[in-house]
Amino acid sequence: MNGSGGAAPGNDCLPAGLKLRFAALVMILLVVIPIVLGRSPYYITVLTNAAVLAFISLGVWVTFSIGRMNLAQGAFALVGGYVTAILSTRYGVSFWLCLPLSGLASAVLGALVGWPVLRLKGVYFAMITLSLTEAIRLLALNGGVVTKGATGIVNIPRPGAIGLFGLTILPEFNGADPLPFYFLASALLLLGIVGVWRLSTSRLGWVFRSLRQNEDLATSIGINVAKYRVIAFAICCFMGGIGGAFFAAYHQNIYPATYTIADSVNFMLYCFLGGLGYILGPVVGAFLLIIAFELLHAVQDYQTLIYGILMIACMLWLPNGILSLAARRDAKQRARGS
Amino acid sequence: MEQMLVNGVVLAVNYALIALGITLIFSIMNILNFAHGQMFMVGGFVVYYVYGVYHLNYFVSLVAVVVVLGIIGYCFETFFFRRIRKVATREENSMLLAVGTALLLENLALSIFGEKQRGVPPVVTGVFRFGSAFLPASRLLVMLLALVLIVGLLLFVQYTKIGRAMRALAQDRELTHLMGVNVNRVSAFGFALGAALAGLAGGLLITVFGVNSGVGNVYSIKAFIMIMIGGAGVVPGAILGAIVLGFAEAIGYALLPGSVTYLLIFIGLIIFLLLRPQGLLGKPWG
Image (cartoon, rainbow over all chains, first blue to last red):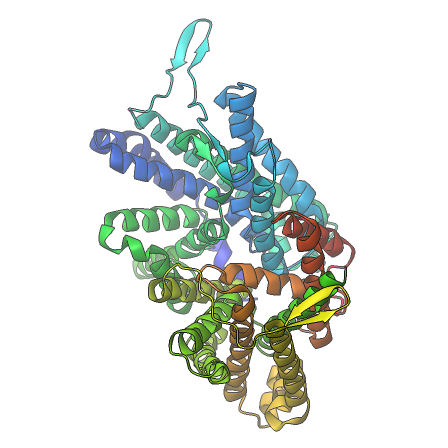
């Protein structure tokens, strides 16, 4: 298959160059942006959204790396959001405990559902995951007292302070200042990038790629295909759950319609627009689209229409994503230099 | 009980139209038409405007549906999917393109038709009674029309020249090309036909349920469920899937509150796929 060639360039020869780029990203996210934009809550809010949506999309990217088109990420974000909502409103569990628990709950559910569902490939997997997004929404809608149906769960407490031995390490999040949420979102995103990067350069990453290229061949050399694809899917769901938990605490509410099929499709669109062959693909895609649309107020009514057109255009003329343009330029420069 | 059966038959026959349309496109193009539900919705709106607003004959409006959706399907194939077949490096590209067309149609519809739920006056009036079950004449009409269309489609695909070409295309694209079939033309025709079937189903069901510009995904999912139950790309499977889904819905809606039916259908589907991932009549794969 031709597509296999597209995956490698991002991963093979990176160490020095990529570390540098990553350091630049850390600086921009954690130092430059807070200093430059720290006083305008609006932009910080936009960037917070972009960062966490990019984090969730990174999960979708992981399922792409095993060759599955995952349209269920919205469902797992919803699960994560509800876990945080229920634990924190009903049992008063701290957000900092809810966050990992939400990811874990999503991952466990993902593994349970994924085990049968991942036997499907290609369009079949896309169909069943799309149905799954709808199924989880219906589950939330019919959850009775647990999920409170269509009224949703509101007044979810914001993350509290973290203290150690009486010392406040992290102050309580309050509504007036969006920066703490921004830092949390950026930290999540950076952790996500490092995690996925480590993952895809580890043995596991190579196993995942082998699954994408040929599952039968992978089986024949002794790879437990069923186990590894469930692992990939659970990682994806974990990230979806974490993202959902973040937004639940950030918006302080969650409804069955918070994540719909459109969201699942958007997560995938971010991956594609940025470029499936690159770890930073979903990040670039998400930031680009979200910031672009926040800046273009005039067309916001037509946002999804433009998403549709963009998606078609991207598939027809830029099937390997925006980052493939940069890769092409790099290759040209290298050719000229040598 | 009888009422459930009657409702089930009406639903199953109309769903079969949807399932056959998506199966047609899937088998000859190897593309999953994510926009199928949106095409259904556009078909409903065409009937709403031609029959409901401009008061032309209902059958004229159905012809209009075939023309409009045929053009949409033809254009999708000619301008989008033909190119993606050439440039695609991954299987996902054509799927995502299909998702893009669905978004495009849905949002165009939202801009043009607005968000309101639209219905049309009944085409025929009167109610038939079977035992304890009631069957409004309008539902009977919809059911009969759908039946005629299904039989017509099956005969068309079986006996006409272009029908044979489509079946050949489903078996082996390259070999069909070698046999001198104009593959591009047949693909475009097949896509147009599949789109027209989706639109016709919408045009028929609008008389029963009405339509709004957001129903697309609901019907796409129904189409997916049907072909997952029956087996993708298999004509008898599509009909079987439609029967299963139609009756499951009719029984569920009669006995359970609102959206619990679909929740149970989804759970059932996942368990079913665990046992038989290729569907009831599909060929085993991977």
